[in-house]
Length: 354
Image (cartoon, rainbow, N blue to C red; front, side, top):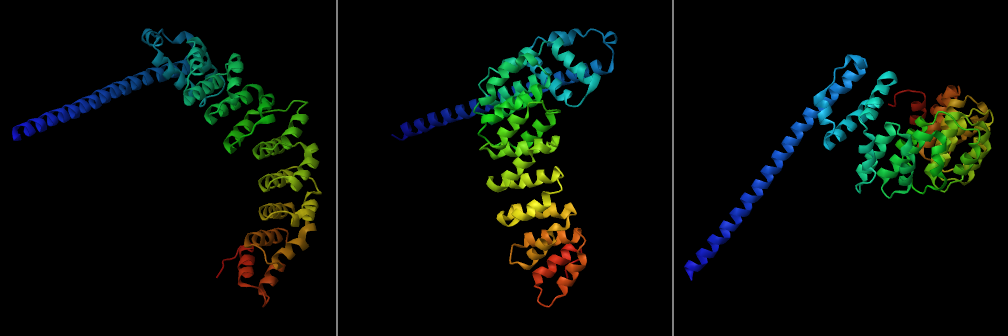
């Protein structure tokens, strides 16, 4: 019985040892493969970087035929790395150098590698393919890319959106008509940088976006109005201050100020008390830089009210910027002035609080 138990334990030990050795062997083989892949990639990167450098620096007739590079260029993995390097390099150059990079892309027909990614199931590969086609300005890929505007992955549909705007400018923003998801600040910035002009018939689309149920669409539209100084939308911006969310109202106030209408401060003073605190603070910031004296009584009243300190600070700063520093100094000296008010006034006067 004892011998049988010992034999069983020995067998179990041998099995466990075999499994451990097998696992160690698998890990070793995997590491060797990854190391070889890393070494190969590093070597390829050096070859590709030299190729890109030579093409940018030298004229076509000064570059000898590279048989080794030509042989590597039929390898799928090499071609994908080559495309990755070209996309990265394109961002760093402009003018003639940028054109040289685009010529390399076409010479080696790397469009095929980018297009293949659009048929992949993994979102990051699809997004990468869209990015590559966009950077390399492959216009005939627009119909395929457009299909991904409704893709469930944000990584994919964001790249598709940017591609449409990069290729078509303002016309590429048509997806905003019914876009339900929030547009990130970074995405909005990318859109703005890609739009250099507006078509003559842009007013209808912009008006529609200002009425969107998606706050981020409205906010982006406000940035568009600010960038191109679309003064005719002033009345619509005024309307937003009565119906929109606090976030949109804050952006609307900023946009109104950028349009430089002389009636803005007076109007904002009239609706000031109907606004939530964050919008009031933004209005006070507008008053501070406006140099308009019509809001002085409102600012003085805010310092006397029992309201959040953030509003009082901005009211005091506005009074100081509008030339009423003496009033603030006298206010702080009054016996009934609270410690909080004194500190706020000193801060506005740019003094150190003792």
